[in-house]
Image (tube, rainbow, N blue to C red; front, side, top):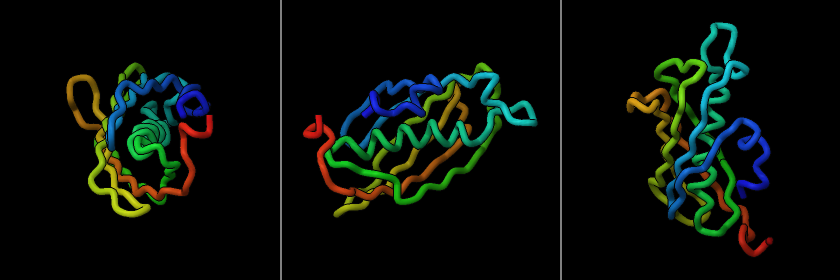
Length: 129
Protein backbone atom coordinates (compact mmCIF):
# COMPACT_ATOMS: atom_id res chain seq x y z
CA UNK A 1 0.00 0.00 0.00
CA UNK A 2 2.84 2.41 0.86
CA UNK A 3 4.53 1.83 -2.50
CA UNK A 4 1.39 3.19 -4.19
CA UNK A 5 0.97 6.14 -1.77
CA UNK A 6 2.69 8.83 -3.81
CA UNK A 7 1.29 11.67 -1.67
CA UNK A 8 2.71 10.38 1.62
CA UNK A 9 6.04 9.35 0.12
CA UNK A 10 6.50 12.71 -1.62
CA UNK A 11 6.15 14.48 1.74
CA UNK A 12 8.81 12.28 3.31
CA UNK A 13 6.34 10.40 5.51
CA UNK A 14 7.59 7.06 6.76
CA UNK A 15 5.45 4.32 8.23
CA UNK A 16 7.33 3.14 11.29
CA UNK A 17 5.11 0.46 12.79
CA UNK A 18 1.99 -1.43 11.73
CA UNK A 19 0.01 -4.07 13.58
CA UNK A 20 -3.60 -5.19 13.86
CA UNK A 21 -5.65 -2.00 14.19
CA UNK A 22 -2.67 0.28 14.78
CA UNK A 23 0.03 2.17 12.90
CA UNK A 24 2.66 4.85 13.44
CA UNK A 25 3.81 7.35 10.80
CA UNK A 26 6.50 10.04 10.99
CA UNK A 27 7.15 13.27 9.07
CA UNK A 28 9.55 16.20 9.37
CA UNK A 29 7.92 19.59 8.78
CA UNK A 30 9.73 21.35 5.91
CA UNK A 31 9.83 25.03 4.92
CA UNK A 32 7.57 24.31 1.95
CA UNK A 33 4.90 23.03 4.39
CA UNK A 34 4.52 26.39 6.17
CA UNK A 35 1.53 28.68 5.75
CA UNK A 36 1.34 32.48 5.65
CA UNK A 37 1.84 32.65 9.45
CA UNK A 38 5.16 30.77 9.17
CA UNK A 39 3.70 27.74 10.97
CA UNK A 40 2.96 24.30 9.62
CA UNK A 41 -0.09 24.22 7.35
CA UNK A 42 -2.81 22.18 9.02
CA UNK A 43 -3.38 20.21 5.83
CA UNK A 44 0.04 18.58 6.18
CA UNK A 45 -0.59 17.65 9.82
CA UNK A 46 -3.95 16.22 8.73
CA UNK A 47 -2.28 14.22 5.94
CA UNK A 48 0.22 12.70 8.37
CA UNK A 49 -2.60 11.66 10.74
CA UNK A 50 -4.65 10.37 7.80
CA UNK A 51 -1.72 8.23 6.64
CA UNK A 52 -1.41 6.56 10.05
CA UNK A 53 -5.20 6.08 10.09
CA UNK A 54 -5.15 4.51 6.60
CA UNK A 55 -2.51 1.98 7.58
CA UNK A 56 -4.23 1.11 10.87
CA UNK A 57 -7.60 0.43 9.27
CA UNK A 58 -6.11 -1.58 6.40
CA UNK A 59 -4.30 -4.11 8.61
CA UNK A 60 -6.92 -6.82 8.08
CA UNK A 61 -6.23 -7.28 4.33
CA UNK A 62 -9.57 -5.73 3.38
CA UNK A 63 -9.58 -2.56 1.28
CA UNK A 64 -10.73 0.16 3.65
CA UNK A 65 -11.16 3.90 3.08
CA UNK A 66 -12.08 6.93 5.16
CA UNK A 67 -15.81 7.56 5.62
CA UNK A 68 -15.08 10.75 7.55
CA UNK A 69 -12.47 12.43 9.69
CA UNK A 70 -12.16 15.25 12.20
CA UNK A 71 -9.06 16.93 13.59
CA UNK A 72 -8.31 19.29 16.44
CA UNK A 73 -5.14 21.36 16.10
CA UNK A 74 -3.81 21.88 19.63
CA UNK A 75 -0.42 23.50 19.07
CA UNK A 76 1.29 25.04 16.03
CA UNK A 77 4.13 23.15 14.37
CA UNK A 78 7.26 24.71 12.90
CA UNK A 79 9.82 23.91 10.26
CA UNK A 80 12.13 21.16 11.48
CA UNK A 81 9.58 19.61 13.86
CA UNK A 82 9.57 15.82 13.62
CA UNK A 83 5.97 14.70 14.07
CA UNK A 84 4.81 11.20 14.95
CA UNK A 85 1.21 10.12 14.37
CA UNK A 86 0.03 7.07 16.29
CA UNK A 87 -3.25 5.50 15.19
CA UNK A 88 -5.25 3.16 17.41
CA UNK A 89 -8.41 1.27 16.56
CA UNK A 90 -11.25 1.97 19.00
CA UNK A 91 -13.90 -0.29 17.47
CA UNK A 92 -14.38 -2.30 14.31
CA UNK A 93 -17.79 -3.71 13.56
CA UNK A 94 -19.18 -4.93 10.25
CA UNK A 95 -17.85 -2.69 7.48
CA UNK A 96 -17.12 0.28 9.78
CA UNK A 97 -14.46 1.25 12.25
CA UNK A 98 -13.46 4.11 14.52
CA UNK A 99 -9.81 5.15 14.96
CA UNK A 100 -8.04 7.78 17.05
CA UNK A 101 -4.75 9.29 15.96
CA UNK A 102 -2.52 11.40 18.20
CA UNK A 103 0.17 13.58 16.59
CA UNK A 104 3.14 14.43 18.82
CA UNK A 105 6.51 16.13 18.81
CA UNK A 106 9.50 14.10 20.08
CA UNK A 107 9.15 15.66 23.56
CA UNK A 108 5.67 14.12 23.78
CA UNK A 109 3.72 17.36 23.31
CA UNK A 110 0.45 16.60 21.55
CA UNK A 111 -0.05 18.92 18.58
CA UNK A 112 -3.23 17.37 17.11
CA UNK A 113 -5.94 14.80 17.79
CA UNK A 114 -7.64 13.14 14.82
CA UNK A 115 -10.64 10.80 14.73
CA UNK A 116 -11.28 8.74 11.62
CA UNK A 117 -14.28 6.66 10.62
CA UNK A 118 -13.50 3.84 8.19
CA UNK A 119 -15.55 1.89 5.67
CA UNK A 120 -14.49 -1.44 4.18
CA UNK A 121 -15.17 -1.41 0.44
CA UNK A 122 -14.24 -4.96 -0.50
CA UNK A 123 -11.24 -6.62 -2.04
CA UNK A 124 -7.93 -7.80 -0.70
CA UNK A 125 -4.80 -5.65 -0.52
CA UNK A 126 -2.40 -8.59 -0.60
CA UNK A 127 -4.37 -10.64 -3.11
CA UNK A 128 -4.21 -7.83 -5.67
CA UNK A 129 -0.42 -8.15 -6.07
